[in-house]
Amino acid sequence: MTATDAPPRPGTVAERSIDAVLESLHWSVLEFGHRELAAGTMRLDVERGIRFHYVANGEVELRRDGDGDEMLGMQGGDFVMVPSGDRVELHAARDTLLLSGSLALHGSDAIVPRVMPSVLFTCGFRVDEPIFAALLETMHREASSGRAGRVSVIERLADVVASAAVRIWLERGCGNALEWLAGSRDPHLGRALDAIHERPGSPWTVESLARLASSSRSQFAEQFKDAVGDTPARYVTRVRMERAERMLRAGIPVAGIAYQLGYESEAGFSRAFRRHSGFAPSLWRRSDELGSAAPPATVSVQS
Image 1 (cartoon, one colour):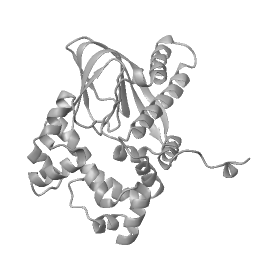
Image 2: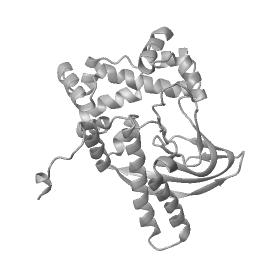
Image 3: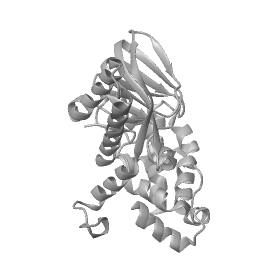
Image 4: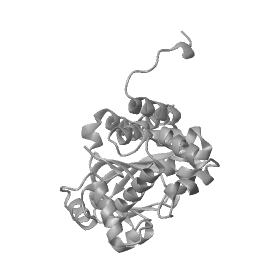
């Protein structure tokens, strides 16, 4: 049986989309190693590429430049990827062993900064995905072994681990696999998606986005809905709300968020955020800080 004769894959549209995304991702390792951080110390992470960190043991706070110095607390078994390449500070709350590395993404690298969050966090990787946590620890042993072929082994293990982290993020609804596919398959549509993510506060309309995609209004609206699974207006709102969650977590005032995201008033932004999350922005921030009733952050993958 040839590839073209193969039966269609089982599963839902979403599952098949995730399959297609993961097939398009090919990771290679630029750098990998371990870091021992003593309690109370800080290390600046400015390495190139898509960065990842796995807390083998200990506790560390990750602070990322942009959107008001975003902060993320990590404990043993937590895994994080930082696709944007931003400067990151690592503050050890107690003695910590980090397994860290840089990845390059081939094939679909142009769309990664657009559709992935600024921080992709997998809470409890060791508990929820023990096989992949074990692979990270195997990478550490290989890097320390001095054995022949260790570079090739690490490369293959990193490809599996990074793909697993992206799969978890997509499976749990923190991202949309259709966005990956839309941008890679249609460069005209990709330009519109790029613009929305780069400037979510711009007064986007179907007409202005259609011009970026070199398309008519009706054709663009239809193609966008088919490719992404949502209307342009709803997609813009979703991107704004995802950005708002990160800005709230970073401590930016609600009025400032409303202005930066293109709302004419704080009240207008608050109504939109409540429709999105079920919470007023100020209550969402307090609930998120307490780890209570707020919905899971769009930049995180949690159980």
